[in-house]
Length: 280
Image 1: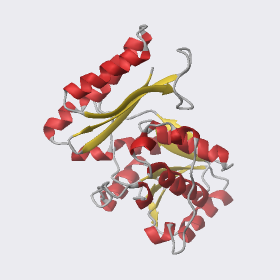
Image 2: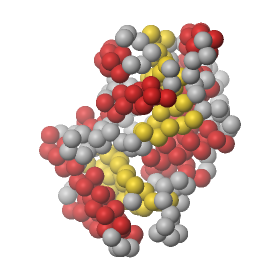
Image 3: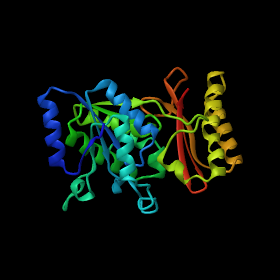
Image 4: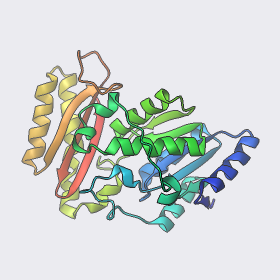
């Protein structure tokens, strides 16, 4: 199936109006392009819940800091359209920056709670204001019934879920389990930046947090388990931003071991920043 591609809000709403008239339910998969099998899994999960799926492609300048890789972010629209068609997407929305942020645009969505948990927000202060602003716009523009987000970006998932609840946007945010390579590495658009040697080293993130989770389940205290994981990664050449355990819903530091827990990590390998997380 070849998906239809639209570039303007007017064209998007003409298509979704037809679906609404037919009483069809639809899901949205927000992406920044560089489509890989993780994104395609989000489309697949959307098709399980809805009659139609929209995938958006927009490299959002508002979530990149001045020192980050906006210009270098991988872009391959033709390849993305081909992959999304194979995945079953019905409609692809590819707005240009002027369509999303027209002249005079001056509104930003900002959150506390999960967005101020001292994780990604500590190292990328501009990130979640940019994410929630674009995601709120895409939720409103598409009018979708469901929004599919991967659990790999776990804090983002919780921030977006909270934002939709707080702003009464009538959409169900669905978290989809992280898609991994056969050897365990979480799939990410930024994995293309890894050298062959770094690609092998990168496996240590998943293995180290997996071992930490096993140790915690086995009775080791949380601080000791995360400290061991951090030391392991540092010894293997990573620059660790954090390895931490948080309440799986609020992202607050846990008060007791009976809470639902998530171990969350971020670390640099060379010039590439990798994130991962698993339940404890």
